[in-house]
Image (tube, rainbow, N blue to C red; front, side):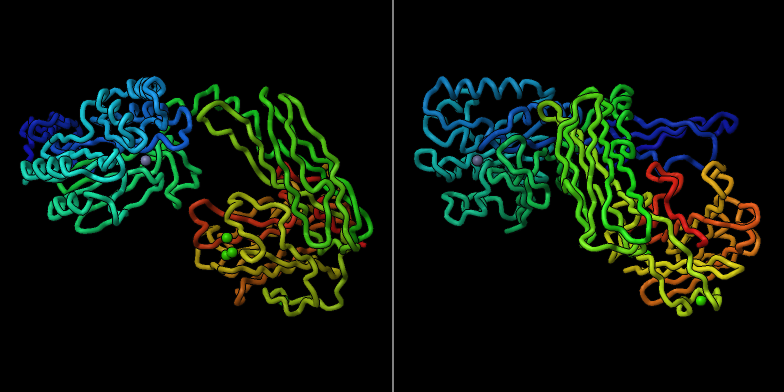
Length: 614
Ligand SMILES: [Ca+2]
Ligand SMILES: [Ca+2]
Ligand SMILES: [Ca+2]
Ligand SMILES: [Ca+2]
Ligand SMILES: [Zn+2]
């Protein structure tokens, strides 16, 4: 493709340079920028006039789903191909009287009439697979096979129900026709064949070997359908593409199974066709989100939709308690909701599931009784998980609006801090700790990138809390399938201990709380960038990498608690988090596993993570 470049005003350097580029016959791409550096990579627009774009729609029969083909028409009009091809099975057929067949065609053609560009018919077995059907098809569309040429590309449209009595196959007259057409167009740059059945996968198909022999040796792509099952194949130097559905019967298990409603977008280039599969669900018009629809959805805050109170108990071990689960529907529309409870072994929730429809602007309250088969020490308790899904069901061909999330019911009680005779060395190694009793295999909150945490085998941790007369000590052992300590900023593994040293809940938490970060590769500068609040003088941290994760120790001077609590400290609230970064998680951001919900989150409660002196 040759191009001409026009440079206007190049000698008048005081004027902005005007650059215009044009393909022969194409419109010039004009731009004005005075600088030598340009805010573009090229002015050579991708507009080869020999290239063109068309779409292909596929099966609409065999248990058709109403409205899908009409949806494809509307969505192709958004994309504006030059024309639309097809591979047949337009109507369900399978009637033996003219009247009902004609009624089916009238309905289908009323949908086709919506196309803003030409549409080319190719018959399928539902359209012309019996003599009467073929008769009606030919009355409406003239011929069952034909060809045309566009920009030196041959389009050959065949019928695969051309055997005796319109059974499967390609008859001699059609083979002769194809031979003649192909002979008359020896030098086209590409041959595109459209036919209903993928006869190349059918060894016994009458006439196909002859067609294949005619196509062999020329650049050629054959499109078919019929199986409702997408498959891309190569053979005999020919490309074969079998398409899925555009409304035809399908269980729609998705692209991996070749089952989806879609259209094919073909760009014919100098190098051959470039084929893109577009799922109908992936073609959305500009009004997919408007202020009105955004406002409607904003009512539904995932962290407010399902709320559960913590189960608080005294005495260090848990036997049973009740959480109040409130599901709120802020919309006028009914909310269909399902909640599934997940408990640790030995713990039961009753009811174990909630499934209900909540009328508009109301809430549903369920009392969930949580029971341990045998008393469980606090340090070993894991939260009860509520996995919920909410659905606002909508009209034809629009999927329900599906909302979902997780809520965690914390089982919590104040902890008494053990006193040490010998202080641990704050060196990051935890071999000087007899035990790290707090086991966090199910976090109280998974923060930010929730799906990146795949469960305890991905990341879990244990921690211990102890004191002597001078310091409060916290030791953490993180276990991780993929330790990462060479990251940038928070893209690596570390622990974060948050301390609330207030005497009572009435003081401002924001002013009183602080966090301490420790990790094998976290520098003091990096920690300082992410730590919150005013860290007191004399805090010590250390962390080392171990084979399956890392360990860390933090020491908080008790003097800082005394200063806050007027002389003799009595209690402190703690939260321990572990950032588990794994290389594959980067796409969706950082994940921090917290023992208790963050104190700034909507799921926190005043009694979370309370440790008392005695
Ligand atoms: Ca140590
Ligand atoms: Ca992960
Ligand atoms: Ca991990
Ligand atoms: Ca990791
Ligand atoms: Zn078919």
